[in-house]
Image 1 (cartoon, rainbow over the protein chains, first blue to last red):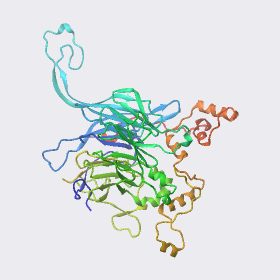
Image 2: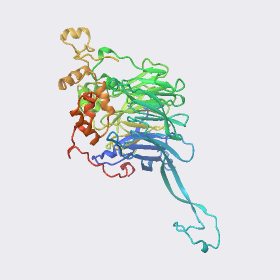
Image 3: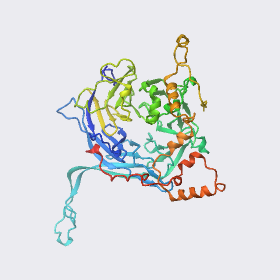
Image 4: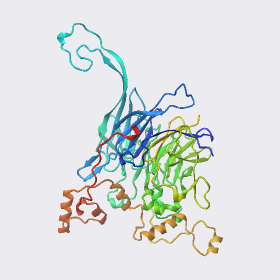
Length: 447
Length: 120
């Protein structure tokens, strides 16, 4: 069946580009840890375990090939974070970029927030395509002229030069998190943002780095009583007073900053009731929410737990309005997935531009799309084998038991080292970025 | 917060009542079957998986290096058990000083920073 896509059930996904090394020997630093489109979709940022950020820019559509959307090419790359050492605790602080969030564009420059476990940085990415030439007191190479040799004056003029993209750190927001930062989210007011770690959420002003307000604190007085941690947090897309945070126990709390300075008391608690007879050792682990994302409309939010994606209506706390099974066949493999730690993998999820389709990753470099309107889902694969330009991706199917049909893959043949944890969807078009361990795939719908 | 009962008996699965009577056996849901497998391999596994131990391990992420302060504190603790506050087994595991590092334990030096292959 053809792929799921917004606006119709006839979207076919085609390979567009792949970035990264082909060789199988993956250096740890090259592991992609976050992928994010900016608000226009023109820029695509990736962060990796080595603390580096690479930004791709979409080329303007070529007049020769109106059937193709512009390709994404490298625009800027920089070292965002470096490894650090916490001397007090004798602990290493990883430089891995956990999250990147773009600020809405206000002027010619682009701004993004990138964070590792402990420190958030605001980066300014600006273009320089002209430079002043014709100084009176300086030669073109920068050497100073002897003023006595100057006989006439001229006005320096701007001359075009090869485009140079510069990234500079404008703010460093440090020392506010005892635990590991898992989320950052820019407020719709464009002035503040939140950062969340395992036990606390802080509110920052983008201009102020030496002060941060704690808005959620779930640390128990006695750490022995710790039962759940914060796994993700996000601001509402248009209500600047509202944010949500998810927990390792499968609950989501919605908080209103107008209610009190410290939002330990939630305004809403979203939790699906569990059948106690179905409870097992794994229940709590697989219910842990690894990602929470508001819909663009702000009416819904989506959560990702180990086996499913759930859509919640903000007006209904009792249960999700939609539940999609990502890879239910793994339920009978939980024992081995616990032993190899895969059960703790944190998958992300994303919405398409008009909130009609949601996407998330799985194992074996598979990723899944669920069309909410047409009630269709599809499994696609990000692999070098199906990477001929504009070749249509063939839907994949996992065989759960019995006779394996041709082209199906059995559960036991799945490669659990090939996980797609990070995916992103262009804010307007059907262009998606899918990160395998060390490669970035870009797929587009067939125009 | 619900409590896990130690040594839970297998629950009845989705099979219909007639099927169960025919088989004369209890049917486990796939999840419960996996739990039985896990308990067979790790009999000492605690009944509360989401409890403090797992979360504490999660909070304590990152490479811990040898700390001479911790090491000397641990040595002193062995001598003067009464003077220092009681240390729980979980906390003990986190103290660097108890374990004397050997060359094999010392982590590999991180390679020099190079450009990302995505930008290549």
